[in-house]
Image (cartoon, rainbow, N blue to C red; front, side, top):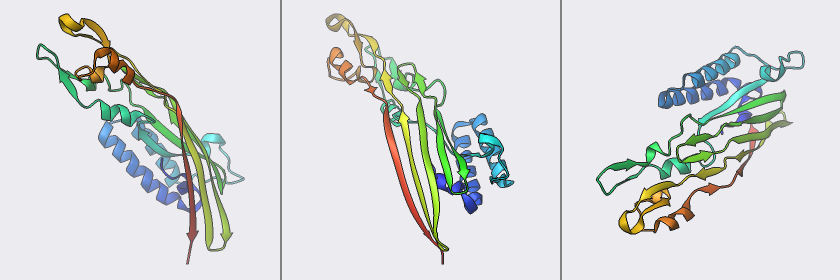
Length: 224
């Protein structure tokens, strides 16, 4: 997740540049037109100075800014890295695991910052999860706060505390024909061609519970 501190106070212009680079990267790799549109709307609002102050409050969306947009989530990397291989059936047909472990829809994760005051913001967002033919990845939620305090005229303390929660991963088995000796059995799709007995491979099916990943960030800024 990108640093939410960047959108507070005078660092707004720097945030625009970082967000623009993120949008370009996602657009080039995945061709997500709707993601690019969301990025551009945020960049436009920031670039034209939609500032927040006590006399200007346009509601939660008027005080909220996109700080991170990524494709993935908790346990997504595990699925991607484990489904790059394949195996060959007894008849010579090649089976690619990619078709079973690719999401039907991208798991875009969006994180926003809502400014409560010039020095305090709430971080929030999440992802809807993803589903492939042989697995399901649950949704995630992001929640946190970011705070900045001026200790002296040239010394600023910035603190960010946030967490990502959820992302339960479940995997479904395949059914394979192991010939006259083994017959038709349920088997872990990823281990169907291994030396393990089919029944034993079921012990390695993904069943990862929802979990939490925390972030604590402290920055002291000293200006000369």
